[in-house]
Length: 285
Length: 165
View 1 (cartoon, each protein chain N blue to C red):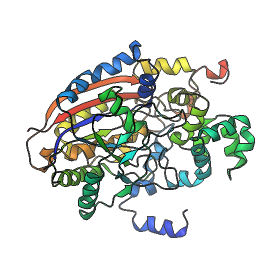
View 2: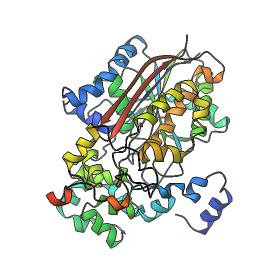
View 3: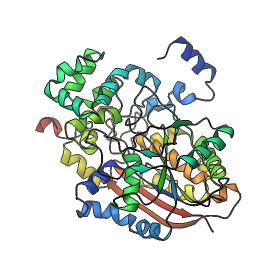
View 4: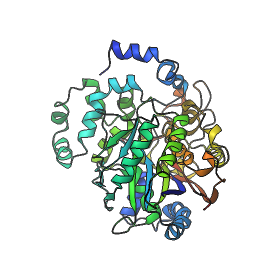
C-alpha cells in the first residue's frame, strides 16, 4: 500500500528561483537562505519519495480570472513550466502520477471534497521553487509530482479548517492506494509577507514562529484561525500559510497515529519581500 | 460575471462566507484585499496583465503601450495607471499584485522593486528595511494606530525626490 512518509513545508519565494537560475547563489544574501535547506537536500537523498503531492498556489499563471478553482488537482502525465513574464524557469518539466492522482480524486470527491481536476496546468514558481530548494538543479526531477493548486489569490479563499480536513481526506486516499509507494506531502507558501500598498514589506517574526510551533504541536486548533488574523498579522500574502494545513492534516497523528518527528526547522528573514520558513516532519515508520 | 443572482446567493450564505461580506479587512492600513468586488472592477486590467505572459504580446506592448492597452476594454483611469506604472493606483482600480507583476516582469523588475515602489521608498531604502527584518507590524495592524504604513505617514521614503523608481 502507498504511505505518507513525511511532510515538508517551505516558502516558495520567486526571487530564490531567480537567484538559483541566474547563478547568484554564492552571494552572502542567498547563502543565508540556502543554508537552511542543506539539511533537506541531504535528507531527501536518504528519504527519496516515489511521489510528492505538492500543495502550492498558482500566481495568475495557469489560472487567470476566467476560471478560479478553489482546489485544482493535477491529473495529467506531465506539466509544463509556466512563463510568468520573465520566460519559463530553466527547470525540468514536472512528471505527474495520473493513476494515483485519479485515485485521490475518486476518494476525496466521494469524501465530499469537490476538487477540480486539471489535465492542463502549467506550474509556476509556487511549485518549482520548493523542488529547486530541496533537489537543487538536476536534469530531471528525481520523483513524480502531483501538483495541487489552492486559490489563495482571490477571496473567498478556503479556510484553514477546510484545508486541514482536506489533508485528512488526502491521507485516507493515499493510504488506500494499492501500489507500494512512498508519498510525501509538501505544503508551500508564506511565511509573513505583503507585496502591496503602503504596508508592503511587513514581516512578523514572532507570529511566524508561533505558527510553526502550533503547526507542529496543535494543528487542529491552529486550523480554526480565521483569515483576518493571517492578513493582519502576517501580511496580505501571508494567507498562503493556510496551505501548510493541508500537508499537516495528512500526517499520521491527526488520524490517531504517533506524533511526527521534527527533522528540521528553519526560519530566516528576508528573501526578497518575505520571511522564509521551512519544516520537515517525518511520520514514524 | 456577477449580478443580482450572485449577490442573493452570497447573502443566503452569509454565515459561511462572512469574509466577503463583512470585509473585516477594511481596517488594515495600506492593504487592499482582492475580493470579488475588486476582481469585478479589475477584470480587464488583470486580463490585460495576463496577456503579457506571452512573449509576442510583451513585444507588442513594449512597441506601443498605448495602442496595446486600447485593445482592452479597460477604463481610461486603469490605462493611465498602467502607463504610469502606478501600482497603488492599479490596485485601487481592481488590479491584483500577481497579475500586475506581469507588467513588472515585462519591464524587467523584480517583485522587490515592484513592492517597494508602492511605499514611496527608494529601492535601496526598501531593500535595507527588508535586510533589517522587514516592516514591523507594530502600529500597522489597524487604521488609526501610529505605524509607518498609516495613511497620514505616506509616502514613506525619498523616492519622490530621486525621481521615479
